[in-house]
Amino acid sequence: MSKRRNGRASASRMLKRQWQLLLAIQGSRAGIGVAKLVTDTGISRATAYRDLDTLVEAGLPIHALTVNGEKRYRFLRPAELPPLGFTALQIAGLHLARMELQPLAGAAVVRELDTLLQKLNPPAAQQSFIFAARGAGNAAVLKTVERALHLQRRARIEYRAASRGGATESIHVEPLVFKVAEGEPYLHAYCVERAAERTYKVARIARAELTDEPSAYRPTQAPGEMFARSVKAWSGEVATVRIRLDPDVAWRAHEYPLVPDQTVENEHDGRVIVQARVAGLVEASRWILSWGGAAEALEPPELREAARAELAKALAKYDRPGPAKAAARTKTAERVTRRLTSGENRRA
Image (cartoon, rainbow, N blue to C red; front, side, top):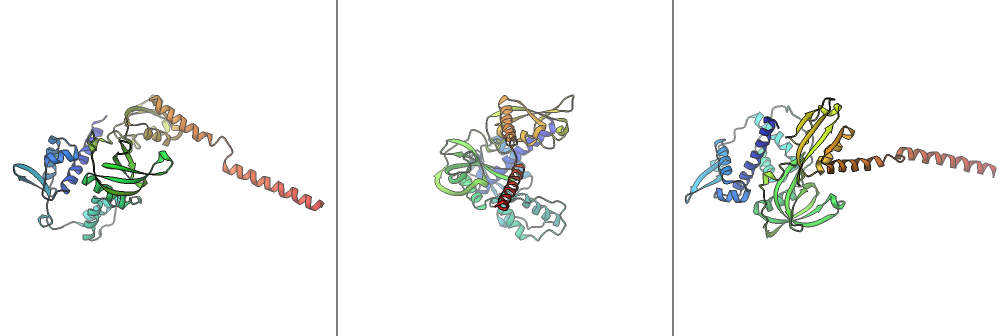
């Protein structure tokens, strides 16, 4: 793993931690102590102090105060904030950021950004970046589940699972953390009925309802580590995978990585072997299939078999006449039938 990749992964984990701290601080008007922050976020005390110092020194609107000998933190109140003085380019940057956050429409961070943008004039400068259109998340669902997360209460959701063919099931969850992957928001939560952690695609949550039942589950790992080895948003047992890419696509291994900290080994014939530690094999298998015939799963055997079985299933669909050929055969049969019928009519 290169130093640059190590640095990116470390920076990503730090941002996740600091965002957790900010959300916890946001929920306390009188100030929240480090002990409570540690309990709510799962971040160690030493790391929490270090991150809080970083946030305060960076100029974020956080006020540190001491109450009964305990250091507490709260956001500055509106009267304590400086007047708004954004430049046109800064406003343009905020609008671009809002476009990228569209999948989280309904979440508190997006609502706050929308409130700010309403107070500002539209960007005067022409945009230099164009973002692909993204679908909006289910605002009502996001808002309800986020409230359950902040209030540490259970939520009842109606979920359409792919494992059940899209059938809807009503379950109770204790939200743990949100993750956005490739523009899609996911919820990692504790499922009460299954007594296990699960990841849910927010787009498949048809409805969410806040309950009065308090959350009782305590995760064994901090929220920021739950997706540490996921390819996209899958969580599962960590395994080492090895995939070989053919020469015609080998040069793109860095452009479309399996995971950010993968290693790429060059072979003498122009092929490369991608090696990575991933959570579960489902998303790794999908990544392999996305390369078509240019990728080969090498290890572990379970990954190789999963890819082989899926490719065999796809190939079987092409072993019989396709729709176009079948349609052509049908038209030919119809023409022959018309001719025979016409001949019989003439003879009659």
